[in-house]
Every structure is written in C-alpha cells, then in structure tokens.
Length: 158
Image 1: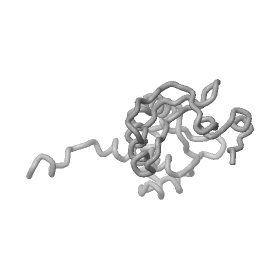
Image 2: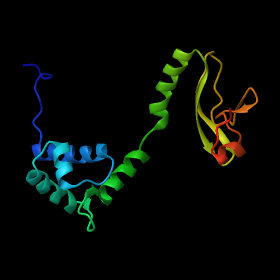
Image 3: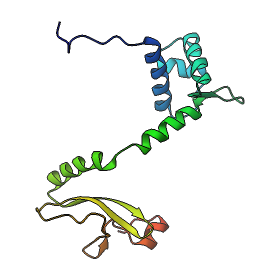
Image 4: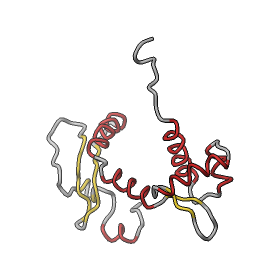
C-alpha cells in the first residue's frame, strides 16, 4: 500500500467534536439537543457528552433561558483570529487574475476607506504597471462604482 493510500490515524473524539462544531455553524442559530444531535448524526446521549466537554472549554454555550446550544466565547475568539489571519492579497490576487482572463477586462481588488475606494491590487488586461494604493476613478466614476454620498446612503448608483 502506498503512503498516499494509507489513512493517518486520528483521534476519533476530536473528529466527533469537530463534527458538532461544523454542524452548529451550518444550522444558523442556537439549537435544541434533539435537533442538534439529529443534524450531527449522533444520538442525543452521545451528543450531550461531547457538548459538556465543549462547554467546559468555552467552545459551546448553553442558554439558561431555553437550554439551546450555540457557539461560546472561545469559538468566537478562534473565529476572529482566523479572520484576522486571512491574507486577502494571497487569496484574492489569483482569483482576480482568473476573473480578468474570463472577462477580458482589467479588474481591481479594493477597499472603501475614509477617503473613498483604495485599490489594493489590479490585474490589468494590458501589461502596463499597476499603481497600488492609489485612489482610482474609471471613466469618471469612483473605482467601486459609488460616490461617497450614494455609498453612505446605501444605494448603488445605476
């Protein structure tokens, strides 16, 4: 059997706990034990044992009002850390190149700041140099397709 064909040995209890956390993320809100266990494919008794441990670790909380389960403070902390570690340039740049190739148009990755849109990355159709960090206008319109007043009113320019 090749090395790629062999499955590494893991810790089954960690995999079950991870299944519960992923199930909760997909369910979209606090859950009763019955609904939670059914969605995770576990018996209520088994799910409860895992939930007790997840509560002890702060990954899950149980409401004192309706006994429903939801993410705890430790889960939120992990989520924030994961989001803060996202490298949008590493993730976004290859996607923008693909989009440029499909559309055959210059495309931009930008953010809206206090002074309007700022270009973080552009994938140009031609080979001229990109000007990163510049505020940019395209054919007289701000790069993001908004003017500041319209943006703050929450309406997209038509």
